[in-house]
Length: 287
Image 1 (cartoon, one colour):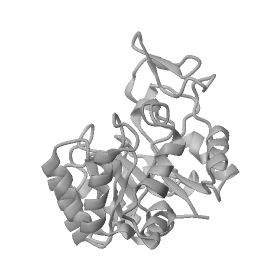
Image 2: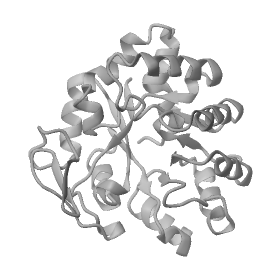
Image 3: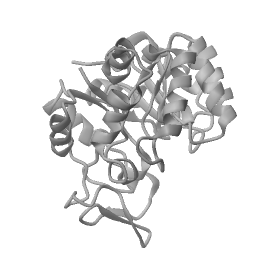
């Protein structure tokens, strides 16, 4: 089974959460505060990333399931992902977007996202805009996630804050997104990899690891080889960051998959199976 552990869906694209003037245009373009940019590939006529469109791409490549993450640049999509979960529960597992409301009443927000909307974990963007997540206000939230086996995906977490979160809730399932921040400071990337190697409940997804790299991604291949040696393939999940234009236009969705399936020839068959689906099947909640 192949699982893409890092994709993005939105319908509609908006900026309400951060009071940003952002809206979808057409043919992949969007407008934010007067600036026009590509939010999606140019083949996306309405510039929306719908689950139907994702399924078409997945089916074409033989990808059975996907993990849907969120990002403030798309607008909070909890409501849309609740629909996706209802309509395609066997194909998608969907993460709620952690926002400022969780600091006001974490368990009320948890109940809305997880129990009412049936989402299956959280995406937390840290340290910006949330530098402090390992604190008493959020402790009950993280402990409840640990008790229910819900993953918490961290984007760009500061190593010291990750360490505090592990200490606060040792049983919490944590995924370090964007290949543990391989595009950022090297020392931070290595420290995050050590966390994954040292702690049983920490994992990595490779989404975004090939951004601004040219296929066949020789530099990323070396980094992945080192990560497998340090942490093990059973701690790593492949993710494409679909449909970000810089990843599935500059380098196609198929190339993102072929990179793991074919080009990373240092992987044994069992390791490749773990990265392409085995790890994600254990880490995330599936119907």
